[in-house]
Amino acid sequence: MEIKVVRLDELTDSNPRALDIDGRPIGVCKVGEKVYAFRNMCPHRRAPLACGTVEGTMLPVHHAGELNYGMEGQVLRCPWHGWEFSIETGESLFCESAAKVKTYPVSVRDGDVYVDL
Image (cartoon, rainbow, N blue to C red; front, side, top):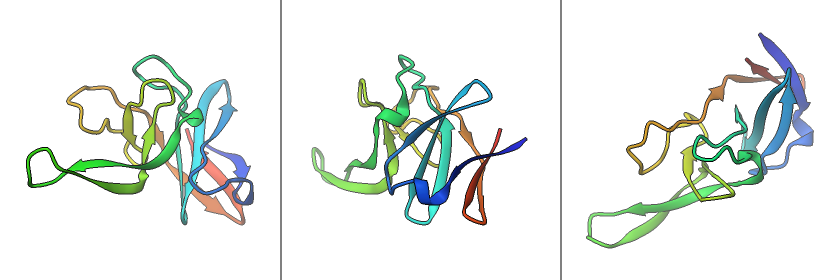
């Protein structure tokens, strides 16, 4: 079921917004030209993920102990404990945990953002 949730021009880049859609906590975030929707609840301790940040993270490189910053705008970070998830897939980053954030398909038409629940 596709639901109109917000106007595109109401979203600011990389700034998640919390919504309640039919009693479901949903986060919506625009990153560049793309819009993402996710369950607004961290699987770790149920923190509201829309209160977190969308940025990059430190990535391991070929030399032991060396890290480089990458994945800018692709990482949803929990505000409570810093758990990191792919904003696109909801997969946990760098953790072999089964913890995953539910994501939802998004479409934009005539300046309106729709989420398919």
